[in-house]
Amino acid sequence: MATAEKILNLARGELGVKESPPFSNQVKYNTWYYNREVSGAAYPWCMVFVQWCFAQAGGEDLLPLRTASCGALMQAAKKAGLWVTKDFLPGDVVIYDFPGGGATDHTGIVEQVSPQSVVAIEGNTSLSGSQSDGGMVCRKSRNQSEIVGAVRPQYEKEEKPMDNTPSPAHKEGVEWAVKNGILTGDDSGDLKLSQNVTRQQLCTILFRFAKWKG
Image (cartoon, rainbow, N blue to C red; front, top):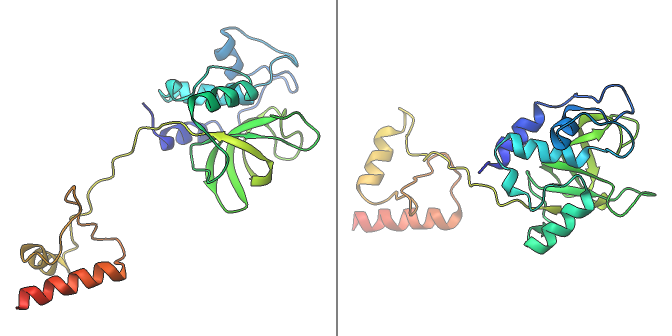
């Protein structure tokens, strides 16, 4: 399976891709999805772009349905228990409802999240024109109020390397602390040397040092 970052890296590489000719919906993502060249109003491609990104990254099975419809993916995600309506994360597939449109107007892959907005990579949008049929892959910032919800794929967890190698200036002290049981790692043995220390962790370190001193 693919990770969220792998999906996003692939989507980032598509920024700026446009349908040709303009207003035709003739674009490589539709050609891939329908297995032939298509054009016309019947072939909007924002969801097709999402499907293409997941497939190219080896994560096609992470989506609950192969579809060109935002509404169909939403319903499939709800049935599969993959639908969320808050606390969005990078890699979520958000579904938008823009004013004056249908109930599910547009989609994108979340790249960044803030309390009021998300930044997503979206197909078939534009920098300043139509936001749900603009003919281009763009990075867009959207208010969270425009989001109906999101599909939360069950991504493969990215393994992070253990942070167990001290810098030369601290090597002697770290090795002493580990040897004497003052500094210990988590269940996997990760010392997390570059992470901040909480107050409770500091208390534990001081307690172990006091025990060592007798």
